Length: 304
Image (cartoon, rainbow, N blue to C red; front, side, top):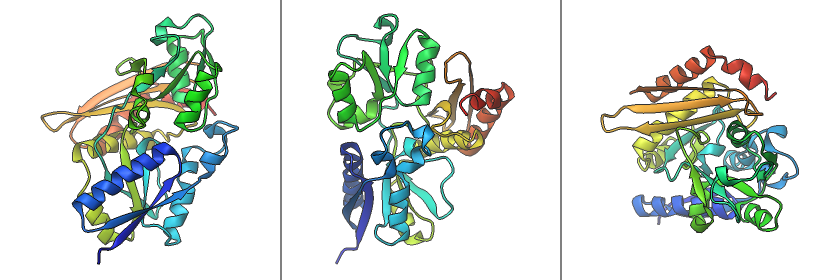
């Protein structure tokens, strides 16, 4: 009889898609069966305020982690951009899967791209990183909060509350909303969130046998890029309370290039740095130090 892995997951359509995606890989490539344990997290429930004011993206993980500690689930599946740089000591990321489209999507019912928006247009996002980059490019825009699942955010746009909204391209594509993407916001002028587009598995450190099985499923190139971006984020003490963008790319010669940016909330100040190297952790720390040397600490403090 096959052993069963219980997967803790948020209940949103996107989280369920990601968990079913991972479950299919586990069942196809290991001797394990899977079952899902859908849960509602505090981050899903408290939609009245932005995440940076109530504890950050870690609120999407807390209940899932508690279920693993209680023995109710074996692993949790996350969008890696929602996973804090500094995990609790009991946990580890044991696998990351091939990265999807890492870009942000410009979504509008009336305009094709960011430059088409009229003066004073209202754009919806609750991401400080997106807000900062929007205002850096278009200081005339009005940025209004936008939280909820993908479907509810799109409905708010359709209800006329915004002229445009910014969402992750990967999430829209995974849910079949490719046609809602009017244009993609891409590097080098626009940087995504750390680890955006990647899906990963979190498990307990003490579960060595399971971690070994799942780590064999990881996409190594994506994992190296995610490690570089997370190393940078950890060095900068990054969270959703500050505006940090980063994108690592893996090259044919096995090197990794990393570009990152730090932005003030109003978009008036920004610094970027880039470097290429072999060791993802050292690369992330090096680029973070370059940003710190340029004044990142002072800019990040503006968000506090």
